[in-house]
Length: 149
Image 1 (tube, helix red, strand yellow):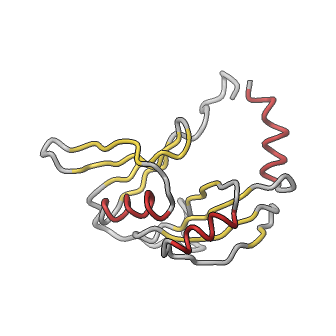
Image 2: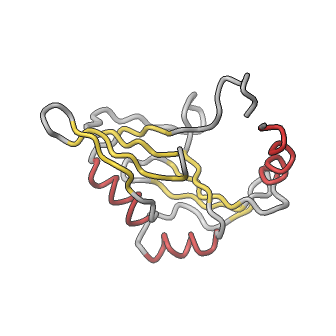
C-alpha cells in the first residue's frame, strides 16, 4: 500500500468463542490451519489463541464468550469470515472427509469466484473461496497490485 494510506493490510480477525479448545480444534483439525501461539491470563487460564493464515494474518480466538448474537441478512456489522483456497474442490472434500459442517455445495458467486459455506462451533459463518483468473477479485488484484508500492 501507499505509505500515506491508513492501513497496510488485514492483520487479524478476532472471534470470541464459547469453548476455545473446541474452536481451536475446528480451525486446526477441520480446516488444517496451524496454531501460531497461545496467551494466558494472569491466573494462568487460556485467554487467546492465534491461528496462522498467512504472514502477518491471523485469526485471534478469545476464550470465555458468554452472550450469543445471531447475524442474519439484516444485521448491521460483521457478516462472515472468508478464507481463501487455491483448490476449491480439494478444500471441500477435505472438510467433508473430516466431518466439517458443510452449509452449501460449491457454487459460483456473482463476482465469478468459486465458494462454499461452513460454520465454526459458535456459528460464525465461513466462506471458503477460490479466485479463478476470471473472478472480479483476481482481476482487481492484478489491476491494483502495481499501485501498492
